[in-house]
Length: 275
Image (spheres, rainbow, N blue to C red):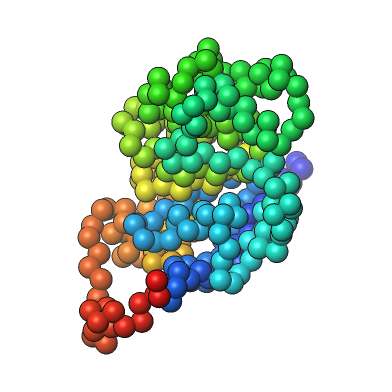
């Protein structure tokens, strides 16, 4: 009998090393390091003010950190100029919270927008690609509607169609289930899984929806007060002995204990960021 060949670990396509971010004097991210593997769905979770949205903005190169390194597909984006970032954007898709569709454009025009920005394809080819992506998100035949004519769930799916129109290697999703009823939210979760399985994308999802996170994640990273508490599988996160993680999972209030000197500084405004 032939011995089984060990599975080769998938390479990391997102690498974050010792990331630090300040807003004024306040430290928002504190020595954050993270690896996301090729073809993986990584969910980033945390309570309000944990730093998860700031981390996402850094991954999208919308903000520069105070220090640290971020590598996407082998390229250090903290050292790239705007032209290099523009070229890298062709390999990335983003589904923004709320959909972020342009209200003055039809669904089809919204979905085709990245093709118009980044390619020189003729309009007929772009329309074919747009219809294929609308088919994938179950919006076939809706390309002539305006965003105002869509439901919340349909807007989210149209945003996914736009995010994947160029078959990106990396897909970033910001709170995809926010504000949706449980049935529509579950349908979006299934869509994320289908995109990964069918197109082989690496997907990063920022969410506070526990049920959604547990349904779609290969691994979960839990952020708290700008630091990573843990990264692991759904089972590992659920079974964590860290009390702050259990407070998050069980929706328990975590009362903050302040040092007396720190409390006095907060009351007097000492050390507050300059405006």
